[in-house]
Each structure stands twice: as C-alpha cells, then as structure tokens.
Image (cartoon, rainbow, N blue to C red; front, side, top):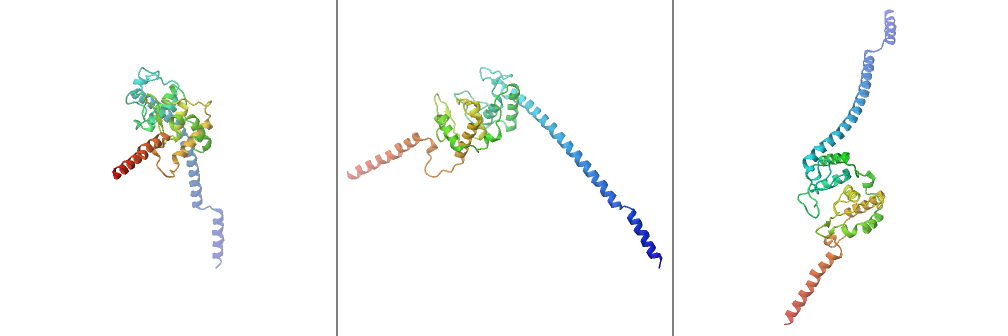
Length: 272
C-alpha cells in the first residue's frame, strides 16, 4: 500500500520537470509561421515594386510600337508632324487619351472636324500610346482625382459655363453648329476626364483654357455643374433636343401655325 503514494509522487515530479512534446511542436510551428509570413510579405512588397516599374516601362515600349504602326504615317516617327498630320510636340498624354478614346483619332478621312466614333484601340493600348508620347513630348497630364469628383460648386460652375462655353455648346450643353461645317458636340454623355481634357488641351475648334483663364477649381466647378446636369431628371414636357429658342420657334411655326392654318381652311370649307 505504500508503493502507490510513492509512485504518484514520482510521476508528479516527472510531470513538473518535463515539457509536453506537443508544446515543443507548437513552438516550432509558430516560429515557422512567423518567419514564413515575414519572408512572404517582404517578397510580395519587393515583387510589387519591381513589377510596377517594369509594367510602366513595358507600357511605354508597347505604346511606341503601336504608335509607329498606326500613327507615325501622319504624325511622323519622331512626332514631328507631316503634311498629313500636325506635330505632337507638347500635346501630352492627356490630349492623346482624349483624341483616341473618343474615336476622333485615327481619322477616317480629312474633313473640317474629326467626328466622335467607336475607339479602334483598347483603353490599355491607348494609355500605352499616351505614355509613349508623354516620354517623348511632355505636355498636359491627368488631373488630380478631386478635380473630377463632381463635388465642386455647381452654381458657380453653371455660371462659368454660361459665360465661357454656352455660346458654342448651348446653355443646355446640347451642342450646336459652327461655321464652315464645324460643330460643338453635345456634352450629355461626356465623362469628367474628357470634360477636363477638352478645357486643358483645346481639341478641334475649342480654345485652350489654361489655369490663368480658368483655375483648377473653376474647372472642377464646371465639371460638377455638367455632371449634375447629366444626372438631372427631366421634369416634363418635350425637350426638343434642348437646343433652345431655335428648335422651340421651329416647333411653334410648324405645328402651332400649321394647326391654325388647318383650322382656318376647315372653317372656310365648312361655311362654303
């Protein structure tokens, strides 16, 4: 009977003096996990940095190939321009992105103005060509995100639009005809980036609005006003193309006066 307490004390001493094999395995596993996590994180960060720089370089190189194959015929291998196309010195990536993503370039044929059409390149290809042009002939670049956020002063932007833009684009931004077969396009579906690009680069017949003419905040306000107008719900009635008094007067002349003439003829015929 005395052997049992002695064995229990011996077992207790062994238990207190020896660690469990599971604890050692857990420590080793935790150490491996921590070490592997640190290594993986450092490797991913390094790979991301390296991949970003390589992607930017490859993008410009791909843009050069695309430019030489599709644009150099008119604009020259060195962007110097030819009799068939203007020089691209100083136009920058913003103008290239605008012209190509709206389908205005490449042009199908010479004319008073390049019409908007379906783009012939993917957005990635367009940005690659723009990046190449920016490396050779730097110019206006993409704006800050806040300029395009649509959170500017809408009332001030609408006022600036009426003063600077409405004479061509119409008060309702529906566009209008210009001289010699040219026209100001509708802005009903124009993106915020392209609204800014048009003001900053002056495509087609549009003047360039530099920061001395319209500050970045002014441009932000105009963009905000146009985006608000694009999203506004029509309260009723016929918009008649939102072309103002010309379309309204033509409607009254054709249908209003036409209806009066028809009633007059009917009354006269009935009395006879």
